[in-house]
Length: 479
Image (cartoon, rainbow, N blue to C red; front, side):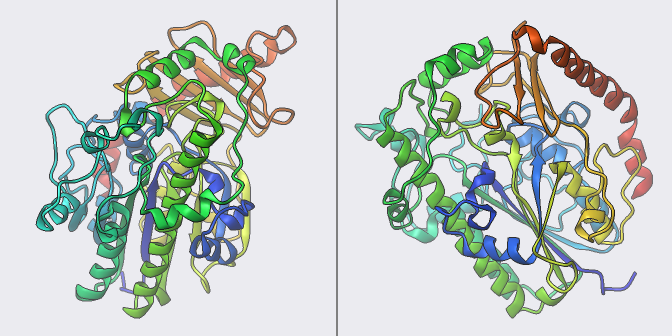
């Protein structure tokens, strides 16, 4: 195959909500580079993640399998396959800069070069990994900011994970990753076709941008969803337990509050959004580096995130729940001159569906037994059949401690969340209740709909397990 195949740049942020891009209808955001990608590209407005936490979602994204088939159900589970291997085997030069969140951290997974930068705040049971960012901070004579240093602040427990970055700006993890990507494009000899995966660690907490990025947001009127006691009381027992758990511990430097003040909530939101703007600035520099070094003319740039963040909406902290604020992700494909831009695909899709599309963009046939369904027809403006349902799952781990296993099924108009070890759950009529406040799980008029969706969920679990049996062997034949 000739080297005329496109360069593919895959940018993945961590824990970025869908409602953080100005051009998608959120005017409080300052995101000129993502706005450009939306206005000139193809945006999937109803993309949902297969897991509401980092590693399970990413393993699913890079394998095209649901977490229960990929074998990665919680953060820390070991991965064993990635479709990057297939790109590398077919002639792509594959480079990772930044976060992948796979285990083990230094596994190649098909990449020829890796410059890993992992979670900003890592507390991992004896498996501490020294990444490129750690080395840079040490070389400058500093100790990396994080949970241990932020705990020394007198108001640590009241900050909801929002802190001012204390070192030079270029040592912040997201600025470091953006600068490293631009440096690699400028310094390393041009090699094509290129698959470049750039993983920004933010806006995952700690929410600690340089203060100059946060100040404009502190002055804005930011939307903060009201959470009533009535809503909290109607949440299933595992979710009420999660609130208790997150108020007692400080996962990722965030100590949750049962009743945070508006000032606390606004500061957290402002610092989080500031981190998005900081990443957007780096994306602009990466696009310029692609252009300056001859890659952009024949390039496809894809932007997404692995899941969102509750940011105290619904009374919750971070991820692990099945609300849209967590499970809905931005997904933009930008390639002016190749695909007609300024389009939005509003049908349901799963985040992992971008995987087979990337393979097809590269001229590589996706392997058999992929649960993912290619988005390429929608990207090319052809007939595309959206998913009738999307599914999401999460097993018990060190963060989600109140249930052994939860699953979600979502259609255009309905959502059901079920727990394997609890009788209560969630049922939302999304057409009448798009904010997911009125839990209809125990509503007598809605029991038929609840059973219908439970049946869909159980059928999916059974069918997906059967259809994906032997997928690793099928992949071996594709290499």
